[in-house]
Amino acid sequence: MNPAPSRQYPADLVSTNLSPEAAGAWSALLEVLRLARAGPLPLAPSTLTAGEGLITWSASAGWELTPEAQAQAQTETEAGALLDLYLPLLLPEPTATLTLAHLGQSLDGFIATTRGESRYITGPANIRHLHCLRALADAVLVGAETVAADDPRLTTRLVPGDNPVRVILDPRRRLPLERQVFQDRAAPTLLICAAGPAIPRNWGQAEVVPVAATGEGRLRLDALVAELHRRGLRRLFVEGGGLTVSRFLAAGLLDRLHLAVAPLMIGEGRRGLSLPASPALGECLRPGCRVFRMGADILFDCELRGVAGVDTGIGSGSGSGSGPGPGPGPGIGTDGGVGAGLDRAMIERRRDECGATPDLFRIY
Ligand SMILES: NC(=O)c1ccc[n+]([C@@H]2O[C@H](COP(=O)([O-])OP(=O)(O)OC[C@H]3O[C@@H](n4cnc5c(N)ncnc54)[C@H](OP(=O)(O)O)[C@@H]3O)[C@@H](O)[C@H]2O)c1
Image (tube, rainbow, N blue to C red; front, side):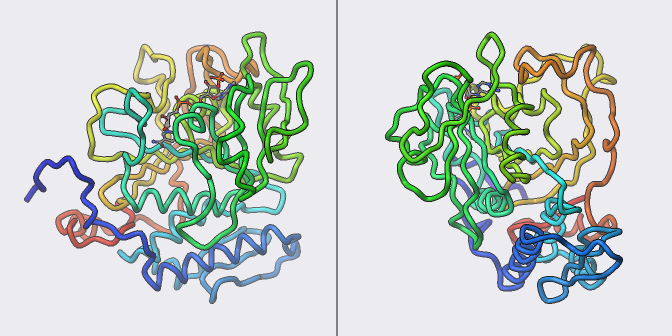
C-alpha cells in the first residue's frame, strides 16, 4: 500500500544511529583510510588486512572486500551496503586522487526553496551519509552561497571520523567574518578567492588562498584542484550547492556524483544541476550508476571518471571541453562498485517491505 501524502518527513523510516554491525563496517573503512593516509602502502605483492578482516590491500588490486565481506555486501544488511557504497571512495593507490560531489534534491530537481531553505530536503539517513562523506574526505568544498544561506559547520558529527579541511569558494570575498567556518576553529579552513591585488592572508581563522580566475571572475577549478592536491588534499568532497557542483561537473573534474532524490516537490527554487541543453538524447551524459535506498530517499551513485568537461558558460573558465557535449567516455557504463549484482527477487521483496527496511541498502 502506498503511504499517504504528508508535509512531514517520515522520520520513522530511518534512524541516525548505525546498527552495531554497520558501526563495525564503518570502523573498518576508517582504519583503511588511516592506513592509506599513513602510507606508503606495500608495493611488493603482499597483503595487508584491515578492519577485522573485512578489507584487504594488495598492490595489484588495491583495496578489496574479503570474500566474507563481499558476501555481506550482497546481503540486505546495512553493514554490507556501507562497505559496498564507500569502498570505491578509498583510493586504489597511495598517490591517487578522487573528487566526489553530492546533491540532495527534490523530485522536481531543486536543492533549496526560492529563499534558500534546504534543511531538510533529504532525510536523516542521507544527512548521516553526508557526514560519512566528510569523514572519508581530506577536504570538503562549498560555494559562497551555501555558506551565506546555511552558515554550515561542515564537520563530522554524526559518525566517528575526522573533520576534513574546509574549502570555501568565495571569489569576491563577499562572505562576512561572522560565518561559523571562519570563527569556530573546528577544522583548518581555506577561503578561495580570485587572484588580485591586496588580498589579506587570513579571514577570521581561515587562510585566504588566491586562485587564477577568468576575466568574468570565475575561478579556474583545475587550478584550485591542483593547489589542493599540492597541499596533500587528494580526496575532495564537493558538498554544494548546485552552481558549484555543476561547475565541477562541467569542467570534467568529478570522478563520482552522488545524487539523492527525496520524495518531495518544491515547485520552484534553487536548481540542482544546471547543464546546457542537449539537442539529442544520444549526446546526453548517461553515467554508469549504482542505486541505493537511503531511508525514504534514493541515492544514485554515478561514475564519472574520464568524462570530458562540457562548454556550458557556467564552467571553470579552464577552457576545458568544447563541442557538442560529452559522449560516453572511458569509465562510463562501468558498474563502479564491488561485488556482483544483487539478487532481483530479494530486491523486489525489499521494495515491498519498505516500511521495515534498514536505513541503507543497495537496490541495483
Ligand atoms: N540540497 C543540497 O544538497 C544542498 C547542498 C548545499 C547547499 N544547498 C543550498 O543551495 C543553495 C546554494 O546553492 P547555489 O547553487 O545557489 O550556490 P553555491 O554553489 O553554494 O554557491 C555559488 C557561488 O559560489 C561561488 N563559486 C562557486 N564556484 C565558483 C567558481 N568556479 N568560480 C567562481 N565562483 C564560484 C560563486 O560566488 P559569487 O556569487 O560570489 O560569485 C557562486 O555564485 C543554498 O540555499 C543552500 O542552502 C543545498
